[in-house]
Image 1 (cartoon, rainbow, N blue to C red):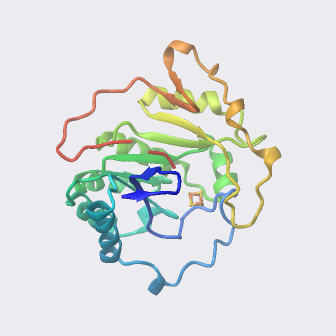
Image 2 (cartoon, rainbow, N blue to C red):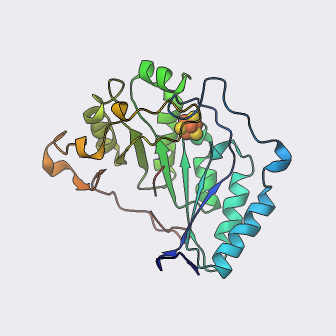
Length: 246
Ligand code: SF4
């Protein structure tokens, strides 16, 4: 069991599969990207599965979340998920992604054993998306969300970072978009994780400012800063499990 000095037991394992990404979000990295890890320093699929196996079989890990960078950039992602799903006891398996390429891979990942997905989406406006991510890929992200829902990766979760004077006026639009499609939307405070040290507290929209007055109260529940649409019935499957965030 993984227990810290306060007696808290850790049962979730977050696995970063790559440091690379196909977006360049202004709050995350500079336009030119980062000094990516040389390939020999990145764990192979077998090495990653070996570590997860130790976590599940010996250390009490019950949930595995794959992240990046952008984890969809790993061509062996479905294999890693399938190997994780074959472990006993089977952990719940989730993925945090920017959604690019998900339209082509959602069904395969679901078939491999993926239970849940979180997709990062900060705006529905193409010009804001371009400014924020330095790429013109909004349509790809929206297609990825739809494919995830069609593949049964429900409830699809959407993670949004609101930033002052950039997209903080878009919260009602994003909430309506997600409610209409049965996605769960959560607003996340911007954290100072940017490699270029550009984070400013004055530009951050805090959880205290996320007002549950965007839409009529009857249309959602508020759980902390998560706005949850009424859930559609979850398809039954021997590979399902559940919960996450990006
Ligand atoms: S925030 Fe996520 S999607 Fe954006 S550049 Fe960083 S890793 Fe990529």
